[in-house]
Length: 214
Image (tube, rainbow, N blue to C red; front, side):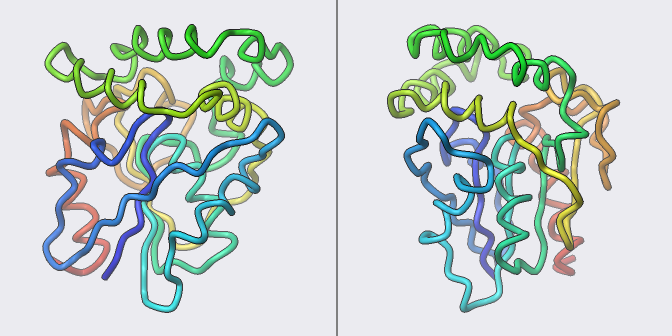
């Protein structure tokens, strides 16, 4: 079994450092270069060349990566789509993200400021001081205009309907994509937005259960 994974906004394969499932190959996809007019659907399609659909596979996404997996699952046919710390549709996005579609201040913020805000907002996501070097390294590895264009993709997302065969795992202490706005299949008690790193064992167990590996 292969699981193709997409990280969260501004992160890399390091986000999945603790995602380990016996008998399953986790392939973390690289970020395609986003463009100014990309939508969630058009950007999701840019991941397709990295996915072999000729063999059984699943999708896994965290946060922004989960939103992209939601759209990908409507294009290709994964056996299951695991969505972690994310929103399955526009309806599940918090109001302070939706409002940016009408007041797009992110478009006038410089790339340097976007990176600085991403770093300063690490406490909202749930990364502690011990993880600062790794998080800063991931943020700084993103291409020019990555944050500006990807934030625009998120705030303008018109996602409707639920993806087939999806399993949504969410933490009830998520400060970014608030628990009260989503309807997950599994709840991680006191799980933060970054729980894929710090509560990986519990998440791995759920995935193994859903794949009948336990």
